[in-house]
Length: 146
Image 1 (spheres, helix red, strand yellow):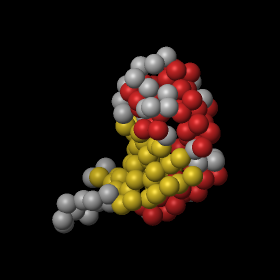
Image 2 (tube, helix red, strand yellow):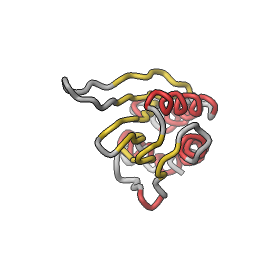
Image 3 (cartoon, one colour):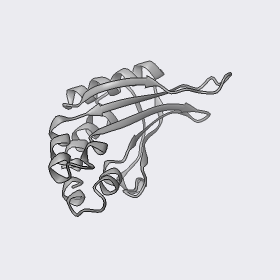
Image 4 (cartoon, helix red, strand yellow):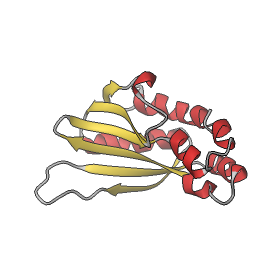
């Protein structure tokens, strides 16, 4: 379920439907063991335009953008960072069905847009890793993560 839902979003956000481009990381460059996954390195485009494209594409794919928050940076730092918090009611319902006690902790996901000396990058919280942790290694996480 997660892979199917995120597949739509990945296609839109990370494979060029949006108004920015960059080095999209192939599946073998990502690991289900990492909490955060880089999905685009060195995105081309202006920070705010990339952020807007991420938001639009998420909404088009059926996700609700609950919040966009600029992350704090040290004084004098010229780099920017922003977190988009996403929600999908069907996905949340499946999590709740799997485990009503811990499911709510995985009901939202985050996309991170950030700059560093190498450019602007996109990462996200890995739903497979989060599901495994939040559902306490219950086998239900495997079903939700495929």
